[in-house]
Amino acid sequence: MQCPYCGSERLKVLDTADAREAIRRRRECLTCGARFTTYERAVAVTPVLVKADGTREAFDREKLKRGLWNACAKRPISAMAVDQLTTRVERYLQSLGQAEVSSRVVGDKVVSELKDLDPIAYVRYAIVYLKLDSLFSVRAEIDKLLAEQHTPAASMVESHTEETPLSMAAPESTSSAAHTVPTPRL
Ligand SMILES: [Zn+2]
Image (cartoon, rainbow, N blue to C red; front, side):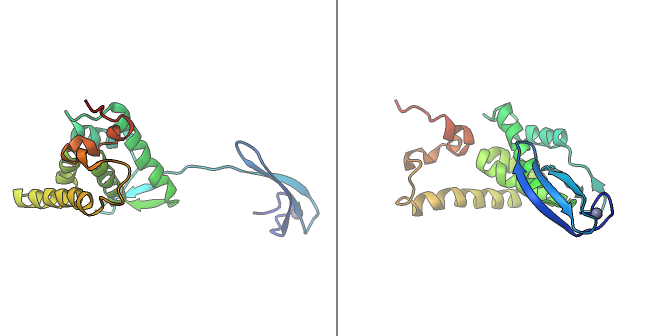
């Protein structure tokens, strides 16, 4: 930062106040003695995506949502859940604090989020994103998913406190909706 009067970078902070929208600082220039105020605000910047062929593309919320809708078609996933997932991906990109990131970062984040949300939507998205082009590669992905779902349930029963192992058979039990709205036991 430079003094707006003389351009010097020898500045001293006199005091700092934390307001709701910005942090306000009183500063003094050690070269010319001028006093002035600066405001520090958070700016959320979504990085530009660099595709595999080197071309750049702005992050497009609507495009991501269309891809998610295709993967989630006819699954018990609410519009709100798709919207929230989109927002989580966008916030994640912003949190990286970079001007550009590989478009793979988006795909990897979506894949990991969908894995928690709905296994069928995850497999659908993975087929397109990971370019699975044979039944064997799709089966390998599903086997991996099944192994991940069942191994923790079997080996972590003692430390598992949030859910009872009774619900492990239902695929819906892994969706985020199941965490917030427990199915009543009859
Ligand atoms: Zn100055």
